[in-house]
Structure formats: structure tokens, C-alpha cells
Amino acid sequence: MQAIEQLSCVKGNSADREVLLGFAPARVLHALSFADVLDESTGRGYQRRFSPQHSMDFRRYIQRSGSATIPLTFNVRPALDSSWSIRQSSGGVYTLEIRKGTKVLSQVDCQHRLGYLANLDIELPFMCFIGLNEREETAIFDVINGKAKGLSKSLLDYHDAQLSENLSAERPELYIALYLNGEAGSPWRQRLDIGGEATSGLERRASLRTMQKAAKQFYKKVKSDRGLLVEDAAVAARNFWMAFAELLPQSFSKPRNFLVTKGIGVYALMEVAADMVCEAQRGETSVLSPTYFAALLGDFALDFDWSSSGPLRGLGGQGGVKEALTIIREARRRSRLKVANG
Image (cartoon, rainbow, N blue to C red):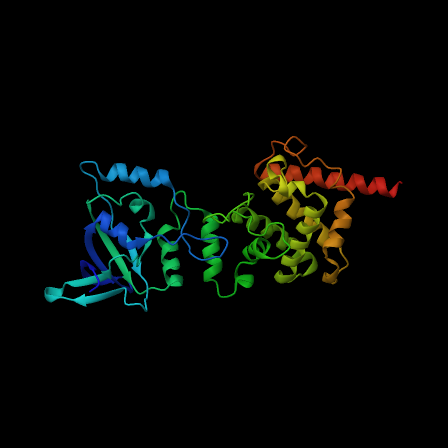
């Protein structure tokens, strides 16, 4: 006979969702639950990466005299293996029965509070949603944590993308940023920081939020000037970065030495990419190939100092981006005059 952990609860509703409310020792809740942290290499999961300091701070606090916490929030997902069940007892009490050795409670809002409590018998309140699927659970996580201090905005953006029915129409800038992060051939592939567990072996560069903001300005310009569909704009952006990485591979292989993949470089170069798209023959999106961008970049980019000690050094904020863009555009202009004058 399999050992069963039993949690006594009452059943009710949290707005439009059915929930269980109860109390249990921290070590029990820890043993039966898991945090579904986003794995950026597979796209599975949705939680932020674990913060040891955040969790240890709560462990110290909860053991003090007079401490308290709001209910830990879980979800017990649909299961086909009979790993959990709900049984009604007398007096309006329900029992959540969970097979010992299984982790079926998804930590919707308690990852850091529960992280380091595996050996504590302190009784804690909990609320558990019943049978939400991963998509529904992610949506509730965003509602609860949307304004949480320290929660990556890139992670919330990624959730928006997963929950969107038509991302290219609803948030074209996010579509372009995720295209750069996911498309084969893109030098940004799995290199944008989304906020989950990092892909092993890849150095971090810009965040998804940074690229999204840069893509917003890029698409605004190419849409109004050339009428590009967002799908074509995303391909053009990828081709621009492919050309840049081909001409200056060290800017991606040794990112710490260059400003190309930092915020200032991303914002300014996406504006330059828009300039180059708008310089192409009107209506001819097929010319926006890596070769097209490489030809234009080759006129000036190889001679420009993109390093952290170059002309873009120390620039930051919106004013810094404007100054960086002015400097880069002037370098392009001088290179053209040099070519024209022999």
C-alpha cells in the first residue's frame, strides 16, 4: 500500500477559481511542491530564477518571535497518474491526499518563501488552486507578481508572448525580439536574458526587455517608411545582426570588450538597421539580405571603435542613445564621402 500525505483543508472560491485553504508544516509543503522555473533552452516553465539571498532572508525572518506570512499559493495540476486526489470528509472538511515521494504542488507564489524551509516544522497557511493547467497558472502568476520588486520585466514579457493569441499583431516589438532570440542563424539566438535559468555555456548580453524596446523603434520607422510587415521586419533585423556578427565576430564572441551587445549598442544599432532598411529600394524586401547589410556596414563598421574605450564610452540613457546614434551616423556619412571622393 502506497504511503499518502494528507492535508486537511476547506474548499471555497478565490473570485472565479475554486481553491483549497489549509495549514501544514513548512517541511511538508516543501517536500510536496516544486518551482516551475523557466528553462530558456526549452521554453518550459515560467518562474524566475531562484534567489538564494531572498530565500535565506525569509528563513531567518520566519523563525523570529512574532513573524507571520500571507498564505503560500500553490496549484495542483491535472494528473493522470493518481498522484493526488481530493476527498470530502465530515463537517465540510476536505482532504488533499498526495502520494508521498511525489511533488505535485506547483509553487505559484511561494518559491522564495519556501526555498530554504525543508527542515522546519513551522506551521504555514496555504491556498491551493485546483486543476489549473500551465497556461492558466502562468496567467495567475503574472497577476500576482506583475508589480513585484525584483521580478524581471523580460520574464513577464515572455509570459505575454506565451499567452498571446496573435503576438505579431498584438506586440510586434516583442515578436521581433523573440524572433532574434529564437531564430536559427541569429547571433542573438538564446543569448537574450529572459529571466529564467540561463542556457548553459552562453554568456549573457542584453535583456529581452532591452531588445524589445530597441525593436519598437526599429519597427515604427520601417513600418511607416517602407510599410514592412512585422514578419519581414523581423527577418530584416536578423539579417542585419547576422551581417554585423560576420564582419565583427569578436563583438559577440568577446562581448565584455565591446559595447555592441550592451544596451547603448543595441538601441543605436537597431536605429542604424532601420536607416539601412529605409535606404533599400522601395517595396523590395527581398534585397534586405545579410549580404545587403554587410555591404553597407563594411563601409564604416570595420574602422569604427566599438570597444568600451571607444567614442561610445560612458554613454547611457535616452540622451546617450541619441548621442551614440549621432556619432555612428556621422561615421557612416564620412565613410560615404571618402568613397565618393576616392
